[in-house]
Amino acid sequence: MTPAKSSAQPERTWTTGTAPGSVPLLGHTVALWRRPLQFLASLPAHGDLVEVRLGPSRAYLACHPELVRHVLLNPRVFDKGGVFDKARQLLGNSLSVSRGEDHRTQRRMIQPAFHTPKIADYTAAVADDTRAAIGSWEPGRTLDISDTMHGLLMRVAARTLFSTGIDEATIDEARHCLRIVSHGIYKRTMAPLGIVEKLPTPSNRRYDRANARLRQIVDEMIRDRRRSGADHGDLLSTLLRAEHPETGEGLDDGEVLDQVVTFLVAGSETTASTLAFVFHLLGAHPEVEKRVHAEIDEVLEGRSPAFEDLPSLEYTRGVITESLRLYPPSWMAMRITAAETDLGGRAIPAGTMILYSAQALHHNPELFPEPERFDPERWLPDRAKDVPRGALLPFGAGSHKCIGDVLALTETALIVATIASRWRLRPVPGTTLRPEPKATLEPGPLPMVCEPR
Ligand code: HEM
Image (tube, rainbow, N blue to C red; front, side, top):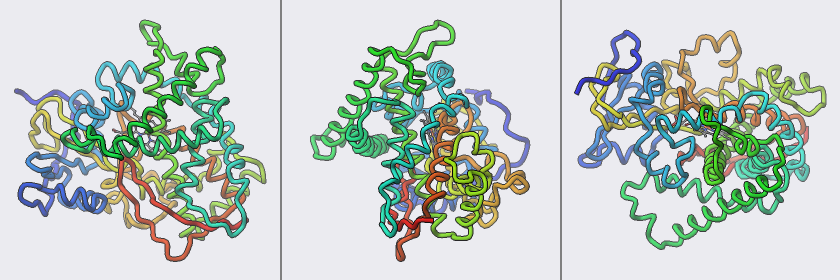
């Protein structure tokens, strides 16, 4: 077989290497399982493309940003297989797991729902929702900022996705189910044999119940909306009106259901964790927090933030970008080669797992000097221009790039500005951040004390 044709990799001599510390039979599986963040961040030192042994199989981590781009910009060769095949059984053939022509068609149908003017509409009420959620905060009260941000984000997601008609108790129930479902999907896609999840264990029964209830809640909302025929200008209305670009056909209720559950799984924990990391970083760096407060006060002059204010909140956006660099929620992703190809000068057989990791890119000192330092000024225009192309990759790239990137960044900036204009959150002494790499990178419990400004 001849190497697959794909867009050219940049002309240069690539370095390739093998991760150290492989053990007989298991290879690097134990290191990747026990200390995945440290293990991934250590690999770029061994080459632009680094071989990793996963049991008997060879996988490769693309470490150089140009190699990562090459992988992500050639989806016909570097395809969504492996864990995505398993996720498809759990999420339906929805946007995040579909492949090839199917994916291209879905993306063309759904993309208009994420155009910038729509995002401005969806997020019009984010500041109000945030103010309502923090209305009960009291000076001196300790709250777990991770849990609080998940709760708030679920309310905001309910509004941007479903507008009206969903009560607080149902939102809480959906949130509870969503956490179980997200963790369950991760466990199931990672389990190699697909047997353990079929056993009638309490944890499997909990997953089945949560999954059924979440789908029931979403299904009822879809039916209600179809019956009423109303257009609330939210994401659900846009999905219900989406049309195939050639045939004009829409999505049926089952397809809309799969997409909505996918958006909830892909969009809620990622954005909520980003917010929790931002507040943790602000609490740990009072000098940065002071600059954020000064910028917010100057731009907003006491008003609620709106979509149009975001370009002026340059430093605050830099803080969010720097948080996504240090703690990328989507910390590792994979592709499978659909045909024999070459990557970084190395012949790669069909069916090989290729990994890319925002964690490895973002913590590489060749790309980001002093990578462990929280330095939001990296993102001010005069310094951001020096960041190598493709080095910052919290939302991926190419045809599978996050469809919700602008929505997530907008929600995050509006929520940070709303909260930080009234409150500062102080870390509880002795609390240590221990990011937990699961389906997404989670901050774990983060108690913080509310202090009015
Ligand atoms: C800070 C928040 C977020 C982060 C860090 C994030 C990250 C990512 C990344 C890295 C990918 C590409 C994965 C790959 O290459 O395999 C992705 C895809 C995706 N994201 Fe996000 N995401 C965020 C928020 C959202 C939101 C708010 C939504 C929707 C409401 C969303 C929906 C999706 C979907 C549907 C895909 C699959 C796109 C496709 O394959 O065409 N994400 N996300």
